[in-house]
Image 1 (tube, rainbow, N blue to C red):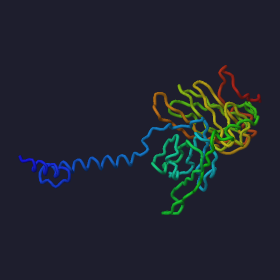
Image 2: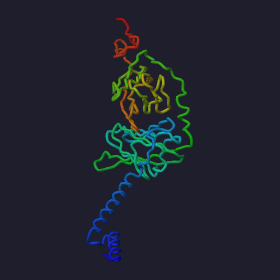
Image 3: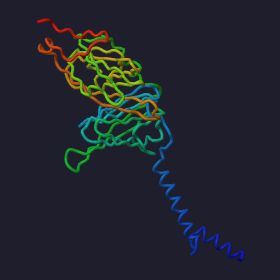
Image 4: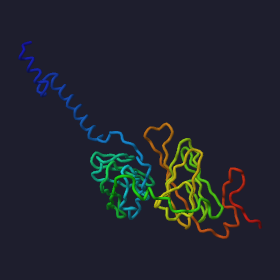
Length: 311
C-alpha cells in the first residue's frame, strides 16, 4: 500500500468518511464519548460529601399543607437543615444556586441547583460550607386538579454555629413526669414501638435505644410545649442523642398532636441513614384515667411506675 493511501485511510478514520471500517469505528468512538458526556452531566455531584451535620446542630423545616415553618431559617456554617414533609403528597424542594456551597447532603442532588423529592413523612437535608443567604422553593400539586403550589423560603447562614442552637435548652424545666406516669417507646433495629403513642398531659414519654448504635430523636416544632425533659435540648425543636441501652424523655404541658422522627446510621452501612417518623397524641387527663391503669410500663425493678388508688 502506498504511503498516501495510508494517510487517507487515517483521515477517513478521523472524520468518518471511510466506506470501510473507519466510519464504523468513528461512530463507536463518538457514541462512547457522548455517553461519557451525558453520564458526567447527570452525575455532576458525584463528589462525595457527608450526609449529616458538621456541627451536630439540626434545624428542622416543616412543609405543611399551607405553609413552610419556618419560612426563614438562620443557621451556622455546617449546621444541618432538615426538611420534613408533613403533607399527604410528595413535595419537591429546590435549593436555588446553592449546589457549589453544599458541605453535606442527604436526599438532594444537582450541580447548580440542589433538588430533592420528599415523600409524605419523609425527610431530606443539607448544610452549607460558607456564610450567605440562600433561597429555596417548595413545589407541590395544588388542591385544584392540574394546579401547582409554590412556596418560597430562605436560609441565612452565619459564620460559626447559630446562636439559638448554642443557647437552646437553658430554660430550667423538671426532668421527671408531672403525673408519676411513664410510657416507654422502644427504638428497635427496624422500627419504633409503638409508632403512635398516646399519653396524658404531664405523663413522661421515655425513649429507650434498643439498638447497637446511637440514635437521634427529634421532636418537631414542640419545644414550647415541654413540661419536663431529660436528655433533650432545643428551642423550637427538641432533640436528643441516645446511646445504645440508654434513654431520654420528655412530657407535655398541653394537649395536642406532636410529631417526631428517629434518625440512625445502621451498623455497617457506609454513608447511609435510616429515618423513622411517628407521632404522639397528648390528651387532657380525665378522672377516668386517674382511677385506672393507663397501660403503664414496669420499672427495671418490676414495680409499676404509676400507682392506682385503691378503691
